[in-house]
Length: 293
Image (cartoon, rainbow, N blue to C red):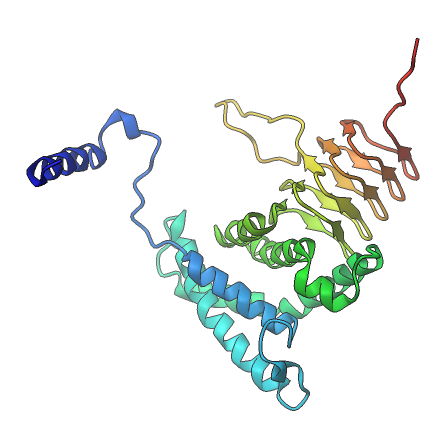
């Protein structure tokens, strides 16, 4: 293609792509607001990992008593600065907020005050994964290497931002882990302590799921909705529609638990099962055996 033909081709497609009144693009909104930065949010997560687990993801001096506080102070200041900017952008992203800086600052401070609680929960998760996996040589291996732990870490962070009604950022954070691990946990899911994911690839946990303490999930488990509920305008309603998993439940690989049902405490759910009804406490659910007639 000669240069003149190429320029003509480009101009023709520019006109088509920027015809914002075209009915072909009626489902694509014009976005004329600040957007959060994927790169900055990833940087926030990297700094948070250094704060939560000194010495694992940064210099060894982070974990030395003589210098740990100095590092932590610097990292917390960095998180505040990054988070302030990204929360500010996210408040503008989907809403008509004006003068959001002060609100963003207050939310960033509120989040930083939650970090010690997040760390305490994550310590129980690492312990649960280690105790349930004979292939794990140490807690350090779990923290440094395990994709299930990475997904939980991202969800714990995202969940606090979600509870604070920060737009967009929580989903960005969990989707980063989803992309890297294949584990999809919505930031809205409520998850108790000592949560364990084994292997993990293909796990899906929906927005309104509630998970108790000492719950273990294996790869391919879906805690999902059975159906969508629509309002009078045909728009899906955001109502509780995912399972409640009580304490001390184990769900084995490739099982789907669907709808607002309850899996009672101390239950074991076998693999490759489809569950749409509540399960009594202390139950053991297995696939039926084939019957030869």
